[in-house]
Image (tube, rainbow, N blue to C red):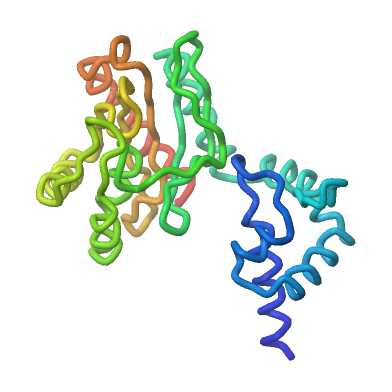
Length: 249
């Protein structure tokens, strides 16, 4: 009975996790397909989650996250230590550079945006909290991957495919880039995921030396040049050391 209860909780969270910024509303069929359960079983979970306010059901026979999740999110944001500690540093760098600043971490097989402070300029790099991107394309993904296990690196190397003309798709070149990142403790991307965007990322380490977050700045390469980006690295690295001490001391 205890194992069944735990499994039910895991499945309920699996249902909630299928909703994303790109798919905020889903049908019963789509949810069942994404979590890999029969529709009858999925429907029981959906009815329960609707009943407790975790999901909402619309007239178009679709489901979306409900009011309880919205309220819990507000509570979590206000008391989430990484947000409390890191967000002021992100605002400081955004105000200094006027460029977009983002915080990424690894979730499942992606890098996910935990926090974003938008650029103050009209032409900007747009990212949303909750957006997911490949680990193998872009400065933040590479800086997280550089400190990941060899199994994770091999898994991601098998996915290398061109997104833009700047995407690194050669395994040898990619491994050399990861080694360079480990040596200098920052990564740079020259339009690897999006043409015309230059980004840099610095790891935030926990007390065991694991890179748990990537602190990233990004902007149009015509304005946010490589020289300007690299010139900011020492200051960002110092900020990340301070963040690490406050988060993991």
